[in-house]
Length: 159
Image (cartoon, rainbow, N blue to C red; front, side, top):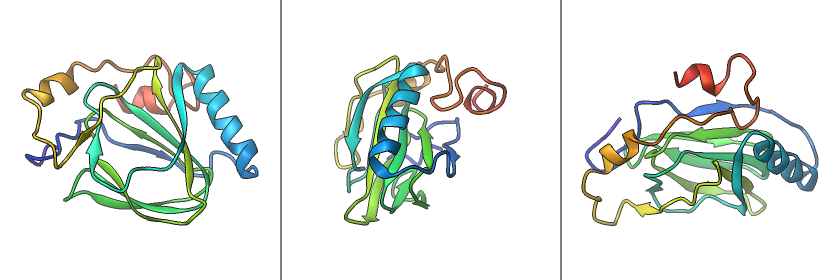
């Protein structure tokens, strides 16, 4: 929830553990292909920034394909989460996130529903006017980035 600095979202972060078990390069390809098949595009391969930030205009999926990390979700007062290869996190718009520490080989595939270009708001930036209203206007994705339209998963959790 909104802590006055990080807006977060009323939707929860969704975490799928050990979705896949491939070598890193094959895992990255699989994640990118799966996300794209389910309408989560504009993909990147990199890490998670080491500063608190959020996106007010789109949700984000992060699929870990290499290494490990401790991420902080929800802003400065948020929770820490250890992630490993094969884990997938779906962050609703407004959810603060950062890497606290990570292995040298830590990498993720990230993507956005319908290929939306994310804004980047750092906690050190001035909080945009009516950012909570903007976040509330971000629609539900059409598909779960991993499981598509199948029963369960993101579509049921966020409805």
